Length: 154
Image 1: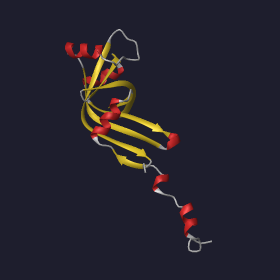
Image 2: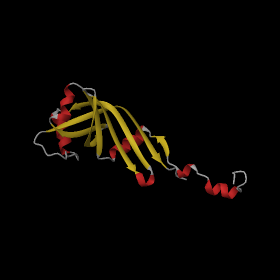
Image 3: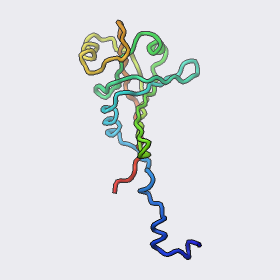
Image 4: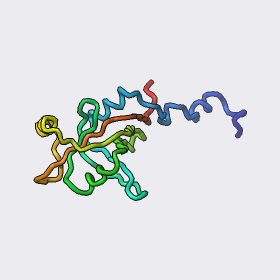
């Protein structure tokens, strides 16, 4: 049977519509910030000796900057030579074939100002790694982009 010999209702019953497949769309800066605000875990990325390093961190969005707490050592060691980083947060819902991702490029620096440290220590963020010497890192956002894969809502 060819498409020409099928009747119209049969064609409509077998047709695949846009509603059947998720659509990819760009997110606005405001949407990206809202998603970051509601997230707990992100991934910081940077390059060491030509190799990409990507580490999960718990974080908070503070005055438009990304802030996380870490132990002295590995994650902080690269700050003395490099400040350019990428930061990514996402969520996926495989059962619905939907999800989103926000990518930030920015500059990272250790927070050393006593007043800023006091604000951070009183805030909601707690490092998941217990350490006597906590070190706070702030990523100043230079650029931000995001995409969402979702079914059209009709």
